[in-house]
Length: 269
Ligand code: MN
Image 1: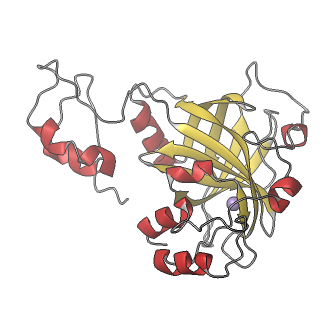
Image 2: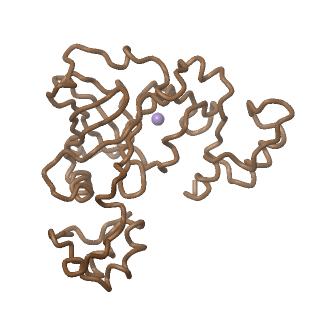
Image 3: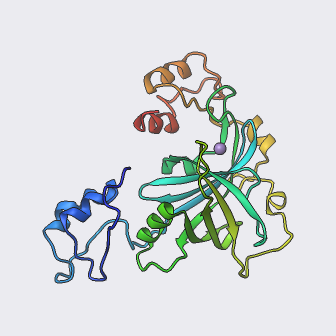
């Protein structure tokens, strides 16, 4: 989403104007009128919205055997999963900086996906849920959402993972742009803390799904959903009902488009 206001400031009283709401993400924009009518420094009514609610933002890492094996790091922010493809995967060694190419934002529902994307489709290959959990902003901005937002713009932010396999403090730092076009390149770096493990190889340590305990081979050969990222909803529903490369057991009725297909249709892809 394009941001029109770059100097968005929040005060501790969190008084808001309509102008502020304009720059807010879609999920918060829905509460714009409610907020415009209220001065939250004077009323005890809730301000509402995703900021500072009990639910912490999600993170997921998917191991993806596409044309090149990589790990997709996704951090929930402003209603989407900000995403980076990390060719060598995360390292617990603070002296190791891992290249992380920022890719397009993904829908939050993608966090549930494990299975096989057919050959020839976008990102074709096996996807494993390698780690998941929540994360929190690790910087000094008193407003965590704003801290992440500014960090994404600035190209430097800290965050703390609370996953099954990855924990502790990390940083993403964007490298200086060269003149060549392409995906923004960041570095993923583990901070020194009690979860740091110099010399370790966490990718080799965990070879199975954090969700189903399957290996990549088992996922590839298993009864997982088969996704079609480049088909419209109606078309894919028909293809699935006919003769699509589905792994649906015989005799079981096809669903009218997988959850993924429905959400991709919503996102216009
Ligand atoms: Mn990927």
